Image (cartoon, rainbow, N blue to C red; front, side, top):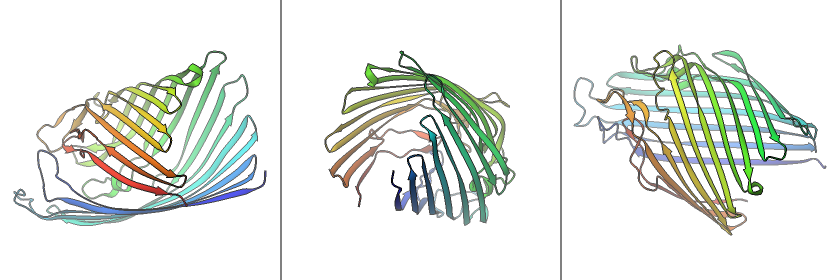
Length: 400
């Protein structure tokens, strides 16, 4: 193989403005939010030989959000007054990845990443003024090895070491196995691993919410499952059982109105998915998930984790057109409209329909239309805060 390389550059800019009506129990018709973001990213990949390639990725994100809430006739009481907040964030990220294949049955992926986040805030409200300027950095090393010998299970072992500017060094791992049972079309699989999530800058420092004493989340989880293919690969059925335990899960504390840690929590459940391709242009998919969660200190279900959820989709690709229709069902879930009259209650279930159509005029350009929440379903993802109604997006994409 002759050494080759490729380079890509992506730019994205967005501006948006929206009204913020507030929760149903305390409407605020003149509150608004506007802002936007600018993203630039590059990717360089070098194919040195048939068995070795490496890549370098860089990205920069600049984001600004301004919230305004002038005093109005609905603002009464000792805390009535104007509100204003401006948040500006910058994220820099550099990553290197090395892909090395020792043979047809063994290869290694390794690399390193450096990321810095900085956020500034200034504002005022009847509760006082706010201001902070904070940054966090994280440097990491990772490696993942894969062995795939005939008549043996495919084995994968990965490890990652993060060095966080506030929380120090932490190592995590993941081990997985999969085994295609000969002559059955069935694959058995399972995995076990640990996780680490450092608090975000908002969770640490945002005025009237951030808690600089937060500890990072730690997780341990495993899953076992099976997949069965039918009709020469045109249909499949897959199911898996999973269990996760959390230490210092980061959540909102209604007693202090600050971000806080849950000492221990756990979740477990079953996920089922299937697919069917009756003919080449049409693919049907469906999924269902049953999840049980628990705050081990109180015995209660974790907030905003539905016990039942599922959905399906149909995608059709015929000539220059792609059409995707999807539906999702989110079951009832425990929630709390903090500060509202309902307190803790079960947020009702909802069903959402989405659609997307893409037309390719030629190999280098396309026009697309997406419809989100096509039936204008009224629901609250978070108690007291209505989700947007039907939304339409028309756009185009050009490669050059």
